[in-house]
Each structure stands twice: as structure tokens, then as C-alpha cells.
Amino acid sequence: MTAHLNNYPKLHNAAWPGLVGKGPDSEPPILLDKMIEMTAAASVDGVKFDGMDLFLFDPHVSIDIDDDGIKKLAEKFQKANLSIGSVVAPVWPPTGGGAAMGSETDRKNFVASVRKACAIGEKLRRHGARPYGIVRIDSASSPHDWYADPAGNQKKIAETWRQAADVAEGYGERLAAEGEICWGGMHSWKRMIELLELTDRPATVGFQADMAHTLLYTMGYNAPEDALLPEGYDWKDQAKLDEALKKLTSALRPWTIDFHVAQNNGTVFGSGSHDKTGRHCQATDPTGKLDIPKHAGFWLKNDAGVPMKRLRHICWDGCMFPNEVMMKPQTWNDILGAMVKVRDLHGWKE
Image 1: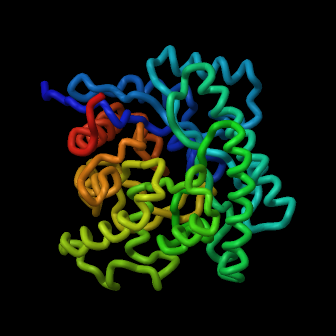
Image 2: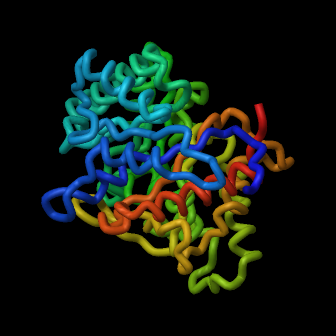
């Protein structure tokens, strides 16, 4: 058995692949209890997942869950020897939220959704089930709508995020905006930085990096003017990819407070009601364009090669896989194996 000396950052699976891209117009969701069961069963060289990150969305966890339900949720994870980490606030209009650059009502609904998520996160901490993690947000707005008034919409999103930051601080929470090409104002790395700077709440509002999504930042999907790789780029030229990723990570790393390990084959994909975004591949997918252990280090270590210890846990993100794939134990062992390699190379011991 291989010795794995590092025990930080903690290794989490995500619950939301059981929900994202599922539903009436796709496959049935995989319920939370089954996601917990499969996560807890995974094992590589005696190493287990330390926890899971949650989507506060039915049928997993209702954003309107009551105190008794929160207590039972905490106990469910504690019984499985899994911590709860970051939680996703359902800030989108169909779930009761609203566009961060929308009408006054939309923006109030956005902040209200963040308030509910922060309250749940804070109570899970008080129950001892959530030792770390953030509340994940986005702009709940499309790039198409954003382009109607780029400057004005950036200002609106930033103002909404500042209001959400006021709420988060009241609960002792931080907010992380996940950079995906499907969210207006966040659809390129330059616009993402601009939005974080406009929000100007670095202690409370930061960036959630997902390797599958940020790869598309380098390619300029939805924002060709900000591409870091040339049109027609030859994926065999690893040096050029490394150069692009180093520029990207150096710019966004100072804002990064949450991190998703993932794989991408350089294409976009959507299923169910989810817009097209970075196509998550399985950890062992031969078409994946990322060297997962190496490229994760671009995010997890600073330019001097020192681990960013503010990232107390990292999470695997792989959405919109067929249920047949997700129900196989080997899928989760392969994912955990990739996570262990990342921690072996870029983690630390406490």
C-alpha cells in the first residue's frame, strides 16, 4: 500500500452531480442518501473521502429546510463519517432567486436566496458537521442578456453581490463566485476579475475555480477577445497550454477561496435544463485535455510553489454524467484516486 503523508486539504466529493442536468427532460436525479452511500464506500490505498459539498436544492436539501431538518442532515453526514463543506445557494429565478443584474425584485430574490443558504451553512457549523467551506453563487444571468449593457450590468451584479456580502458576514460566511462561461459577467477570466474588483469585498466575496470551466476561459468560449490560446490550437503543444493556464491562475488565484478538481475535453455540454458549460469528463477519460495532478497545482500553490493553506478542502466536480456511470463504484474510486494524487503533490501535513 502506498503511503500518503499529506492530510490537507481535505478531499470532498460533490452531491450536485446527482441533480445537475437531471430532471423531467433528462434522467432521474440520484438522491442524496445514495450519493452519500457511494461517497462513503470509495477507497484508494486506505484513503477515504473526508466529506461532501452540497447543493441546497430539492430533492437533496430544500432551501427552506427547517431547524429539525438541518439537525437531521448534520447527523446523517456525521453517521457516514463525512464532513459538509461548501454549499450551493440556488440563486436562479426558477428556484426562487433572481438575476443579479435584473429588476429590483430579481435582485432582492437573489439576496434572499443567499440569506437562506448562509443560515443553513451557519447552523450546520453549529452542529459540528461543517468545519470549513463557502456559499457558492453566480450572477444568475446569461451572457446574451449581459451583452445588452456590459458596463451597466457589471455594476448591477457587483451591487447585488455587495448586498449579499452584507448578509453573508452576518452569518460568518463567505461567498465564492464560480467562473463558468454560461454566467453573464463571469463568462471570461477578465470579466470575472473585473466583477470581483467592482464588488470590492475581498474578505467576503472571492472566486471558486473549477478546472473544467477555467480551461474554457483559456479558449475564449463566449468571449473570444479574452482567449489565451490561439484559434486552432494544437492540444499536443503542452507548453502553450501550461503558459496559458499559468497566466490565468496567476491572475485569479489571489481571489480563489474554493477549488474544484475536474477534467474537461475542451468542449461544452449541457443536459436537462442546464446551459452549455465546461464538459466535465471522468477522471480517467483519455480525451481529457488536463493533466489533473499537475494543473491542479497551478491553483493550489502560489507562484513560489508554496501551498495555499487557506484552501482547507478541495472538491471533485463532475456534472452531467449518465446515471449508469455514476452508479458504478469504480467511477468514485477513480475520482478519489485523482484527488489523492493532487493532495500528495500539492497538500500538506497537520
